[in-house]
Length: 515
Ligand code: HXC
Image (cartoon, rainbow, N blue to C red):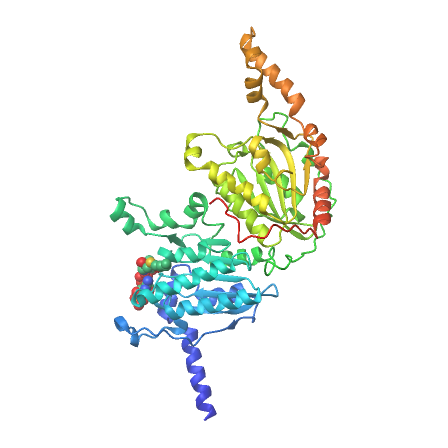
């Protein structure tokens, strides 16, 4: 009797293991994609995966579905470990009904979402799906709705990471969009609400699926993707790296990764990074690389709104988020896309107990009708909201320009920075010297014999008076003007002294953040 039962189990497991069978698996490989099981095996620490729901079957009878066998209903779900830490995972398998999402497929995803949320464990979704299972109609749609709801409830409680490793079409894109970080695989991943054929019919536009919703389009143009990988393996490596910076849930601290890089490391190169000419750009990534442990900086959304850099690093072994204006792109101005990028990143850090270091060098918000009509007021307000709302340690370092509204926006003391440092090259003013001279010395300049010379002289006069860190420091808006070479040590001390910071806000249902 036992022998028969064991055989039956072995038969069923073999069927589940084979998923869509050798032909469809071969096709998946031809497309440069791995199967769900191959992906999970690569992602998790060896031998740690515990599958749940492997025997789940669909219940659909329409459109000939009663005779269709769909192993694991096209999605592999369970838990395992990454660097020894627990994670939940679901991986859609394109070899089974195109990874399409029916009622039971969705229920399996909801199950791991519920378990992950209750236990405070990160969840990783590996998406490769033709979307709602057409044969299952409204049951499939309902499945998505239940997943979206759980994505929302989990937001800010546990890290949710999505890897797009195949198609993701229609409303299916919204579950990834509700998660914290989206990683896309080049050439095989595509995300769009309506595909090329619908677009052609409705608007007459011709566009390929790749140009419309490929990884590059979403990294550079839409800002939907945070990271892009060359292939499945690299995408899964990025998940592992990302998790190394994050806590398991909002109540825990991020893991500490001891480093032999001395926290007090002096970097003479930082003393010469700012050019003599205040209008000359430099690369703020060089500053970041010299501040973080081992120069190891994990940049997110690189390629989108590059006038602002965001990413994760460590100082003294502890995770920090870095936000920096990039003078090399649009002179480091803040525009709509940079504001969105910044606000979402700061809220992500704040949700997961990661201190934020802000490096400031911005002449202000980007002027122009495109920005004004596009709602820079509304989008820029998100930056103020995100910083003022954040209760994690906030340390600001003004490298050079901090003008006007952008001075305030970039985590000024007024918005709640815990400690504000400035380099001697910092200029804190209502606006740049030339613009200021044009307004307050307009009559003198116009009545002068040589207005160009007069404007330059008045701008210099203004610069001497205001374009330095000392006026702001004398008012207490800056806590310390520091030697650039010693920046890492100062930031490390600041983080150390702020480690146990507690900063409660007034109780309310929730704020009404501008969106
Ligand atoms: C059922 C599906 C399916 C789906 C694919 N398949 N998508 N089955 N429901 N949505 C099946 C195919 O019938 C096929 O089965 C197998 O999966 C592989 O698909 P192919 O078409 O052969 O693969 P490929 O040529 O690589 O094309 C992949 C694809 C295409 C681009 C994803 O299958 C496609 O366009 N599918 C429909 C996509 C779509 O419109 N989905 C609905 C989106 S709307 P066999 O048996 O032949 O191997 C949506 C709403 C969500 O999702 C709403 C949330 C609120």
